[in-house]
Image 1 (cartoon, rainbow, N blue to C red):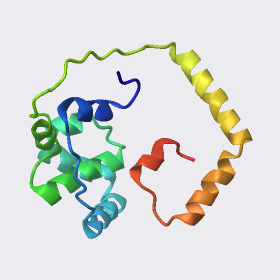
Image 2 (cartoon, rainbow, N blue to C red):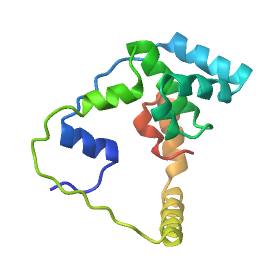
Image 3 (cartoon, one colour):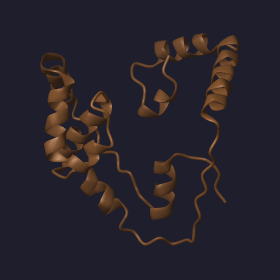
Length: 148
């Protein structure tokens, strides 16, 4: 039994998806960031929409990170993000599985999140984060769960 996890994590277990480390084309990423600054993020959004209309439907026009990722994947592989997702789920499902979701009153959920964040701050979160930021020059995507 497995409890918790993101949709991506759960799908990787169900379909046996192996996410290969492709590396980042820093020059290309910088050129996209520059284009967004000079011409507006909407320009990148429109380019991504032409390349991969299915993927862009699920993304906010303000989500620079995900818009950039669509363009980076296509630039690096010649395939769209949607094509890659379809290919990654072609593996035979080896197990029977059931997925359950839990709903919770949104107001109560936010109240609990806010209480938890207050406790984390009282217990030294700000110092911990500043120490990490001083120690490392760059941080992986996985560290972006809490934005401070």
